Amino acid sequence: MEQRADDGLSPYRIFTREEWAELREDTPMTLTPTEIARVRSLHDRLDMAEVEDIYLPLSRLLWLYVAATQRLFRAQQRFLGTEDAKVPYIIGVAGSVAVGKSTTARVLQALLARWENTPRVDLVTTDGFLLPNAVLAREVLMERKGFPESYDLPALLRFLSDVKAGRHRVRAPVYSHLVYDVQPNAWIEIDRPDILIVEGLNVLQAGRPPRDGKAIPYVSDFFDFSVYLDADESVLRAWYVDRFLTLRGTAFTDPASYFHRYAKLPDEEAVATATSIWERINLINLHENILPTRQRADLILTKGESHLVEQVALRRL
Image 1 (tube, rainbow, N blue to C red):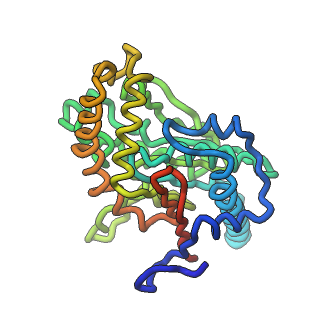
Image 2 (image 1 turned 180 degrees about the vertical axis):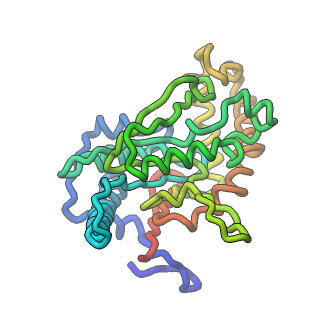
């Protein structure tokens, strides 16, 4: 299970699927097939075998990390002589459009909440922190939706800062994929969970350090652990087009859907439309903003064409 980097300098240990699956040891399966189907996103392949081979070993690893972090927190309390409230352990999940971030975030939430001490595990997506469509349109950013500049970054940073400070009832805005916009006056409240999972395209992004040395916070500064979902570009494009075609006959048929105009496209035109959206927006975002953050993750799950994880890379401590 030693690293297999060609240059021998990789900060990661690389595992085959079979090697990683062995690390589950005696971690129990706590989800039923019905529950697994419930957390699976459109077109993702998540079954009992995938949970057993990939996510149960990851659950075991995270249990060890969370326990170690809690011990360190108590040691620091003793050292400082303080009685600070316990703060949430925050896990970031990043990766391209259509790679399966939502499925990974939800299955992790379900597994972690079934630990022996039944921790409270909350999940937030950064979609809720996108600027409203009216603002994006005014700033000519609709074609850049999902790019870093399309988010209300100060609001997201305030949210994470408040959560990490252990504040009660911190609000996060809600995004509707049906209307493709932030829902006005809709919120979810995060009230000091044991674990918070934050899922989004650009959550691992960092910028250039300021020349004057002043502190500039990044979203990833608040993470205790991070996961990057990876796949080849050609595979991601195929998954995106397949998802678009499925939505054309399901969610897009709702007159309230932002994409209702695509519901009656013939197959050939639908494929061309989806491919154009992918190349004009999502592929550029992948190249410019998402893929460059892959090496900042603590864990990289690399998927094959079948949607199954084929390789796991774990950053060395």
